[in-house]
Length: 269
Image 1: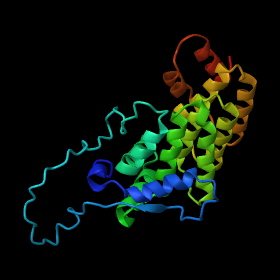
Image 2 (image 1 turned 90 degrees about the horizontal axis):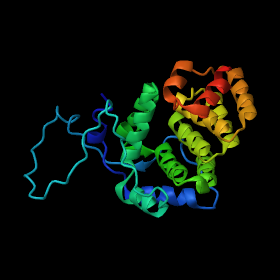
Image 3 (image 1 turned 90 degrees about the vertical axis):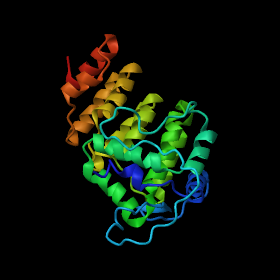
Image 4 (image 1 turned 180 degrees about the vertical axis):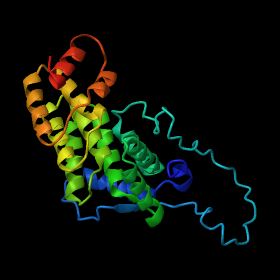
């Protein structure tokens, strides 16, 4: 129910607060301590909650009604957020964050958590927004982090620095945040770093989804570092992780050396 009304409830957060967050993440100064929950104000349409307290309706406006985005559909396979035409153009991406707000990023995070079966965490995210009227800090930090990993291998250090600054600010990452970081590092061929944050997910009590851990092990196979991948796998198993063979089989590109290599690494010959 919360997903179906997400777009109707949320309006873009203020450009000033988003700008402050992006400026904080790009600053070299030590970040101030912040609450692990929120910082960015956002307005709401409370029409449903006020139904029991009717007031005199305002006169009809003659202003042109803006085009609104379509309602959120949790069963749609269409991406929640329209990806930028050039993900390497960080200036344009950060400008959009400042001017358009972070609502779409919050819905994208909600969508990712929900699809991983983390319904409680997803609803907590929107409860903070709805009840407190602010955008959670984790949304802003993750949006910037995701912009860096999507910009390509040259920005993997920026993504890691963004994550480190997020922790230093007292903001707690969720499974979506770490999944974005792990997949981005794996795509940049940073296997060691990706594996480290994969283990951090387990240490935080999170269960990586198949797309996340598969990205790491595919990178090990691609870079012909299978032995290191096996070490990571054994460490993960020691923390209670077991790969899902059917899920891996359905998610892997079933062709040639890459598929056989990943299956052999995860499940043996």
